[in-house]
Image 1 (cartoon, protein in one colour):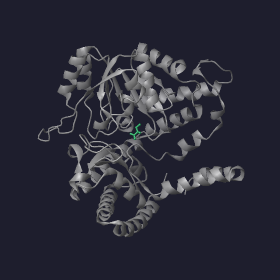
Image 2: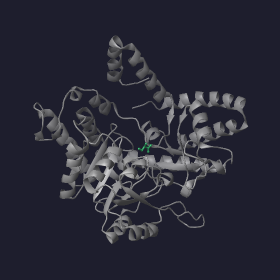
Image 3: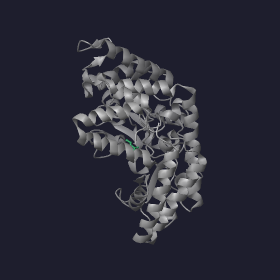
Image 4: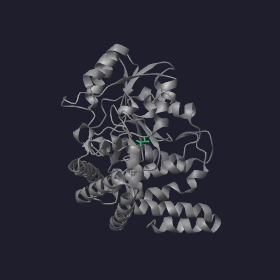
Length: 433
Ligand code: DSN
């Protein structure tokens, strides 16, 4: 159940006019409150962020930018967007911020629209190695209208950086294909990204460097992961993952000319009216991230991810690349049992109240709807106050459930029920914000 009285009161009011929708929202609140969220890209926002979203700012059209809108009545929208911009710039120590992208994928699409022409070549990591669909997947606009070339990881298991970015190969790919843009930043990559080496590769072929820090934005903002600045020309991110804001996107730059192109690409290039209620919530989240306790939160995210990875390793799972430096890990389930798939693991764990997502591991022979891996992350559990001991316990529960699933349906049912009860207890001890 939501614990915040304003959220509760808002739901009660909603129930008076639309009980059907209110009940669904309440049920989702209960699901979140009583399950352990290990999806690396999700988090639990503060009541303040939640409240800013549910406000009258949603009523307004504010196409344009502060001081240059296409509608009257935007005085307060100018104020709140400026606050969001200023806080974003302070947080990431850069000169330009566009807070209007509706999502990370929209932010990337806008960067492509601003900086490339259809058919231009760009370099990125392929989705199946930890990249993102907006980084050149053939079914995405980035792969349909542009020409992606992909740089590899180290695939040789005897290499000390096995399953990590092969920076020499990044340079080789850039020399060979002369991309107009080099993308770095990933959705399932557990290691520190060397932005300096990326910029060297970009400079060798005259490419623009774009860092998509959607996953690690909170860690970057607090210095827990190195910043892409001053290396990247343009930085895109979401605001709802480690940054713990509302669902949305953000584009940052230190380059005035590029930032003007980005602004034009977002509006009028791609979007119409900005979601001003979300921009207000972004401002609130950026304000929270500027406080010292947010750095402690981000440090604990990494400590918790490492504890979970260590716990799973002790139970016989293989963590790709040998561990994690950030909030995310990829668990190769085959090391525990060759028959274990990501799809089964995700389903079995959900029945026990542990929420994960199946994910391919590098060179995964199984298709994306099956996979040999699970992607796990610690941002949401850390928000609830879990510590390293709790994460070791979570690792033990994961193994109990998966081992039971391999044994058979009856054993799985008994074990999931028992673990589900323990998960509820732990969640009660660590209520949502
Ligand atoms: N879907 C997000 C993730 O889970 O990483 C990225 O867009």
